[in-house]
Length: 187
Image (cartoon, rainbow, N blue to C red; front, side, top):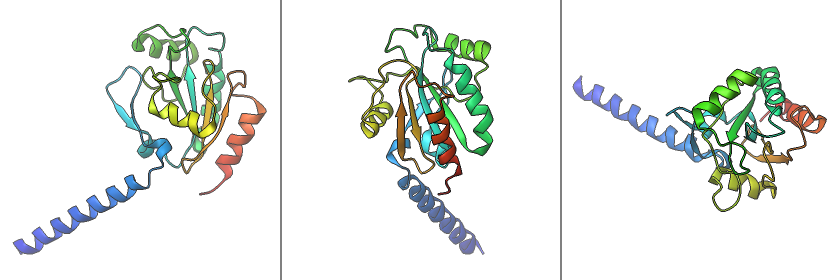
């Protein structure tokens, strides 16, 4: 009886290891990143958390003329999250408009714009110091952020689909149509 139990445990272990490696091996390079949430110790694996969703990635700042886009981003997220859209916000001080510590950024987003979409640690989004996630997004779209609130769109399968400049707000017909198309597309 002991040998049977040990054999079953062994088979189960092999099964778990095999399928864990298979699922991680199938992670697209665009989502193969572990990034800390804003003001928290929790790290999120983008692939495990968001593969299968339409993702709108945005570099944000609290002291920018475009900061009111938080309102439109939250509206877009709230209206489409149950259909599979997630907005991912990345505060950045690359344009010298996000000087506050992370705890203040988090409070500002929640108290001023009631942001509920995931916000990540303060991140460099351009140039040599850019986080590898943003380097990959820029490489895939041939477009790096020129200012705050630059947006990247990632399909359910993890393919990087498009980028949108700062002046293209979250309610812009071009973004809304593309998101709608991706949400309606089955994988």
